[in-house]
Image 1 (tube, rainbow, N blue to C red):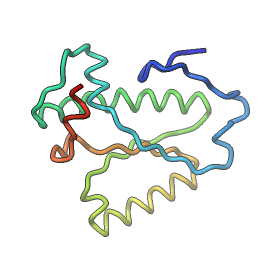
Image 2 (cartoon, rainbow, N blue to C red; image 1 turned 90 degrees about the horizontal axis):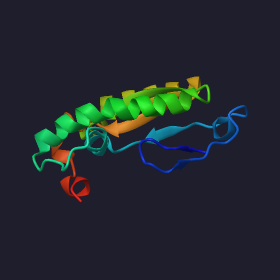
Image 3 (cartoon, helix red, strand yellow; image 1 turned 90 degrees about the vertical axis):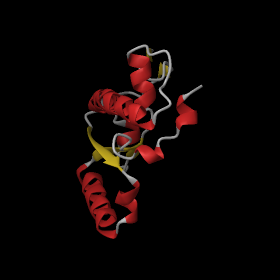
Amino acid sequence: METDTVSGRPDERPDRGSGGIFDEREIMVVSSGAIATTVWKFGLKSVPKDANEQAQLAGEGQPVLMREYQQRFEAYGKRSAQCLLCRDDIDMRKRRRNLRTNQDGYFRDGIIAVYNENDFLSTDEIIMPLCNP
């Protein structure tokens, strides 16, 4: 049994040969933790209280998270895509329609979309108490 490098929890995997949970399912992932990933990876002692500084940490941590997702999904022969969203992407009709169209394409093509809020741009939506134990 391996250990999940992001959460530290045991990584129990179904038989990779079968496809397991990926067989004939439409899967997307809603992710979080880019700031915490940077804190963990670089051994920072605390998370800054300033939202812009947290956004910078999110910018560093997001690719680390995506690399982890990609490696894990590739182990099952699956492709994945990073989808960063802001509130406007949901609130604005045209962006919401594009989001739905692109997600339908990912479902059709068997690509797993990994959604995360774009904390680098939408600093007003960073929830600081969750990041500061």
